[in-house]
Length: 304
Ligand code: ADP
Ligand code: MG
View 1 (cartoon, rainbow, N blue to C red):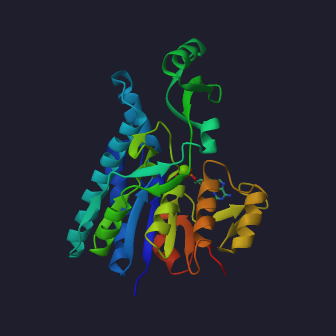
View 2 (tube, protein in one colour; view 1 turned 90 degrees about the horizontal axis):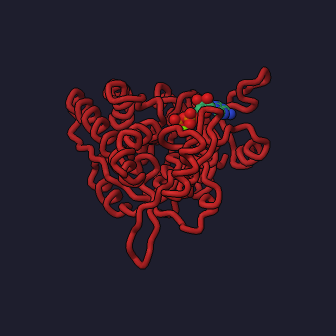
């Protein structure tokens, strides 16, 4: 019997422009369909950093709000993944369907992230232009590594997934679902209605939330490295095969994982492994996904 698995795809699974993405998803889909062919139930989540950045830039003169740009990126990435996975099913004679869900992630309007926006998006501006945008549009503008000023938005945690019932029933019927693209479109509830918010939800945390909601056995976060390391990039670097809950907490406290890249993955993996007995999280590369699930590579975080 296979496992129920949420796969979170990182930037390297998708590439940086349309042509690259069209190519990259072929390889990505091949790896994903390998896991499906072995009898696993797969739900796909993905990031959208470069894609939503590109859409936001192209739409800047059109006053297109960030939630709408996020929705476009889910459609654009989902379309490519759907095409490539369908093709892979066809080649292998697998009778399955795949669909992308435009997904909204609920956030708490009192999330502490709103006090400290951290995610840069869109173009670079001069100091004068930045001040003008702060005054006119109420944006928060910050200096970005000496390259000029950029708009920054908060990165709140997802508390729920709005379309979860649809996602669950599609999974139950045996369909492959692509969801929470870019962490989901951030929304808050106001008198029962949902309102899109200019923010960016980390795809690692949204994937974790999704994995809990659908009661997955595994959360697999696929990124650019085969394993997680302590003392990363230093002479005493050590790549990790297995981590207990306690070890993971200790290494997080000791600051081994870079904020914004490896830290959210390890935190999401820890949260999932700690959420219910038997749940496991694996961080590895796309190339090693199949080997990793067999226990041969990657970093496995579980309640040992
Ligand atoms: P993704 O697009 O998959 O979310 P990120 O670039 O955000 O990828 O994060 C993955 C990167 O994190 C790796 O390519 C690696 O360079 C970096 N990284 C930072 N700290 C560590 C660590 N302790 N162990 C392994 N990789 C790390
Ligand atoms: Mg990332």
